[in-house]
Image 1: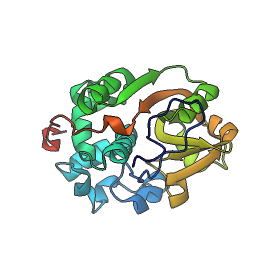
Image 2: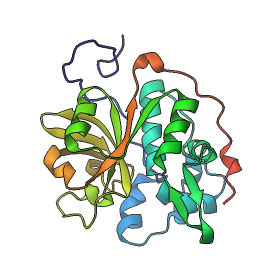
Image 3: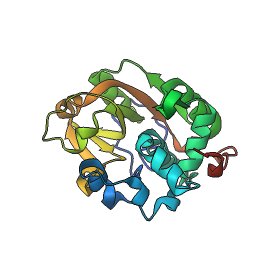
Image 4: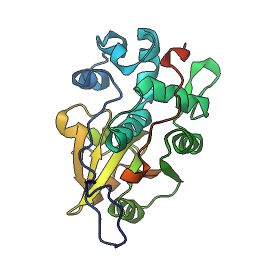
Length: 236
């Protein structure tokens, strides 16, 4: 029997939040995120770095700060398929499509929405739409229609009692809208409550940049992904 969150329907009633959606962080050890974010702890010292599929500790340390979108995709795929490639296998695939670019001086640009959406559709058969202008009303409508949304927010959404200096720059996975609350998973949440977040829509909007990607994942679309490049193909 299909879960209500993914079952096909022809009515227009709001859909329940997707559940269960496992919390997956962009860092190997979730308990180290607070130290990484607020105490200058280097990710290279994470003893569990290899669990991400990274080929070396140095490669993990270089890329983990840029992998919020990859972690969001992994959560969505695990919810749909109950299995998925590793974080770094997904990263290799996304880079192959141009979703990340290493610029002069080694600066990493990404996640770039359009090539990432092409990668997700082509490799994982997951209907994905880019929203360069996404007002809160549309975000709520997408969630009520049963989509997940990778929403661009301030990284400080993990401390919602504070006012953000800017909006955007980080991706969280919004999984539902219930009783006026946006339910989401935060790949860089520094506490269990921050990782499995819930905020009133108006408070979520204070952090939201008004852009993102929507994912439509009915259970009928479950599939085995096409061959993923090996994570070892990332050398730097």
